[in-house]
Image 1 (cartoon, one colour):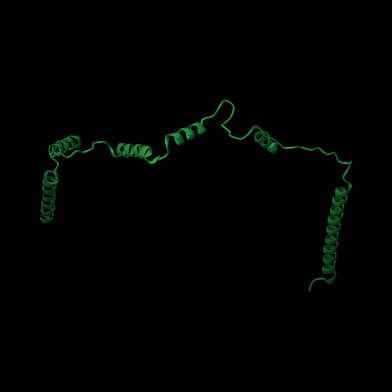
Image 2 (cartoon, helix red, strand yellow; image 1 turned 90 degrees about the horizontal axis):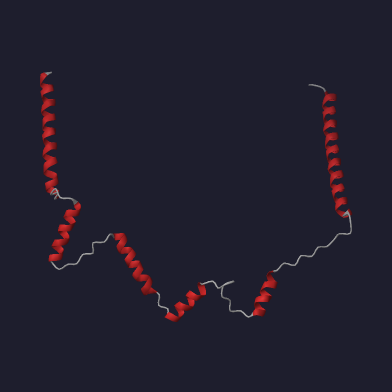
Length: 164
């Protein structure tokens, strides 16, 4: 029993020694020199500047925004007159948007959109619709009475035969 306890202790001590060696050796092996990331980046920038390499230190989002801003001015190949006309076409005037149609065409367009409502009065009671409604009601009553009579007759026939 004493041997097992000693073996567990020895294994634990080896494990603790290995973890402590790893804690000190791994950061040094990976290049962690105790400086902050900003300090390391500044030192790298200084070294690249000495070599004559210019590095843009802006964030990727800032670089993308600047690139898109440059593209928006470069891609639009319209002439200045066309750009001015497009800008003026987007501005509203005092009463409405700029419309190049003649006044007669504008008036015709307004009349075409106006709905004309004609109110007609009927001659009185719609007897045709009343007749159709009565016919449907009477027909459905006859169907229900016929089904009820058929079921009653079937029930009475069963009672006359009796049980087997």
